[in-house]
Length: 336
Image (cartoon, rainbow, N blue to C red; front, top):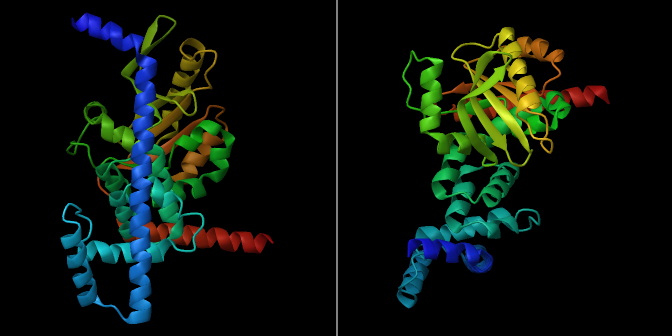
């Protein structure tokens, strides 16, 4: 009987896809209408506060009226109504961002609204959330780990390097692995095993275009076996991504090992329709000057990033991004 159902399922795959797509479109339409309703309520409250002096007591009465009128609805608390007002006032007149807020859930909108200080950060998370269909937990983790600031720092500091190879745009300058259960002192094997055991969170940190291929992936060159710590495939870039794990500071000799692995992958593993393999060295720390020297003559698309097992200091990261942006602005002004 089960075999018959499996056969029938395969036979009707096309109609299943039609039904699933229709349900997805229906859910998106319902969500967009819900966000539109909250937007209009926010606009109404904003106008009443400004024109008629509505305060907390009136909004509380308004909330009680709505909850009595619509007892099945759970979104009309006084706090949530104030959030609607803030939501409307944050995005009104912003033709770029106002359409994006309708593509994600109200819960995720609130996370972005309360967790971001600038339109640039809001746009980053709005687009990321819509593209990856993040759950509340996943989006909350990305905001708490300062993904926007880390990405901007990485792209700004390594703009020239990133443009050398299209594959490197999928990688960043630093990663946060607060979800790993490793205690110091630890070995590369401990780090690798913990990553594989927490693969879902690891891919969330790297990006959902990454697909896991293998741990200690074996490649044979001549009569000798070599093992790549972690091998992934990036669907958007159509290339293999080899990751080497280090539990100490970056050293130039790390690069030679990874370049060797990339050459072997491209010769013996990469398929004809795929792009050249990309390499990433993950280390506990690095000297950017040493990294720049080491990579200057490398022909392979390779990046060196550091990682931490703790969430970053938010204020420190914000200050670093601000200082770097200001320095680049001054350099641009001097050049003119």
